[in-house]
Amino acid sequence: MTTLDLLRSDRVLSVVRAPAIDDARDLCSALVAGGIHVIELTFTTPDLPRHLDRAASGDTGAVVGAGTVQTAEQARAAVDAGAQFLVTPGQGPEAAAIVAAAHDAGIPIVLGAFTPSEVMTAVALGSDAVKIFPAHHLGPKYLKDLGGPFPGVPLVPSGGVNAGNARQFLDAGALAVSAGTDVVSPADVAAGRWADITEKASTFCAALR
Image (cartoon, rainbow, N blue to C red):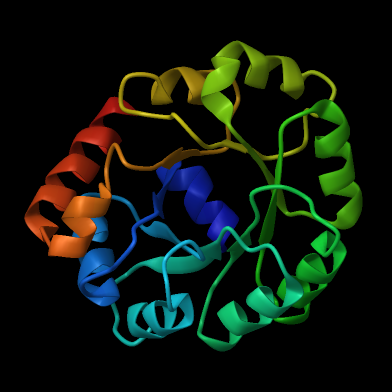
């Protein structure tokens, strides 16, 4: 099963944005136990390649990728550390090189976008799916509107998505939604409160049904 197939099945991925990660492998195990299998560790966390390597070092059942990728150098470092997909916050001057780094490694790339023009550019660059960020500003109705001109483009809303509105984004046509601090608070991640993270992941997943 590909990463996009897994997203289409689970309908959620978890974005981990924390100043520190106690143990990336245990974090992944906790999220999988709660029903979330696709996990994005971001370059806003110091020493991200080390955490990616740790996450990939055991059979947790998770598909782990790198997010907030802004340069080709970061993309290559993430791939070398075992990232199974890449995500960008937008489309900077190195977007094409980031896409190339992902596809050369045989993994999906999800470019960030907000406007219709940015979605068009992401598709033209070869993005396998498009992250709509920040999604909460215009909400599910905006995502549904984007689906009109882009019916075949997998859209993944991120930013401000929570258990209270996630189902609305899915009903509006999202491939999957990004679960952020609603599931993985920086404090829980840094302190290694894995049981709390599992419980929050389970609650979030239940809200999608």
